[in-house]
Length: 290
Image (cartoon, rainbow, N blue to C red):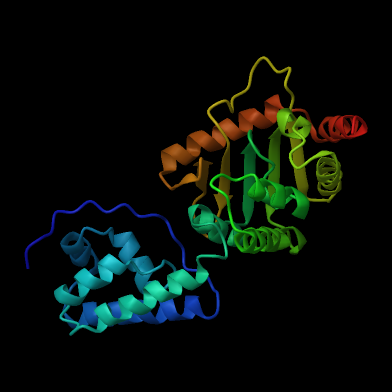
């Protein structure tokens, strides 16, 4: 069989467990592996033939990554699957549609990684992190989105955002820290009542043992985070990864050197920010103005 010259961009989508979807993806992965081994082809050879990475093929076979529709179509011919993988591709598409409303498509891969992370570190410049938002604040953010979202979509996404916050109730807690730009504390998104409630919630979170909340004050002459917000996640048993998002365009970063640089930058940000006691005191001061 001849090689196929293709460039494939992996969107990082991770299989989620919703109504048995994760189990279904696992079954599809087993089918891929069965047909591949029956054809006497290694993952490396199949990667070369299809243009998909060997790591992605391995992850799809293990059921931890969403099977790619195009891959299933190509692999059906290459592995002489007799139309089985093509048929399964239709069901994969239906499954993807079913889970599409749980989280906005642009951050679904991130929330899946976040849910199982053993360490979460985040620098926020434009918005309160999702894990720290109140329901009213989250709803206000979605309501001001343009183009307009439907009421049903807002309700679904707010519910999904609040479900993410179950991480804060787990024990043992993941190691979690946040550095928030002071501008976030002074921007009354959603109005005065919503903003007061959000500041009060930050004070509550800052008082939870094991959670570390710091503020980057506006008067700092040095700020290592002017390149934009980012999050660092450490999955169990795997190297740290990074996540960046702007205008709903996102990127999960796995390159070790890039992640190392961002981790070092985060360390600098924490050193430049107020310490936890000073940060909570500033939040209380700002709350007093409301």
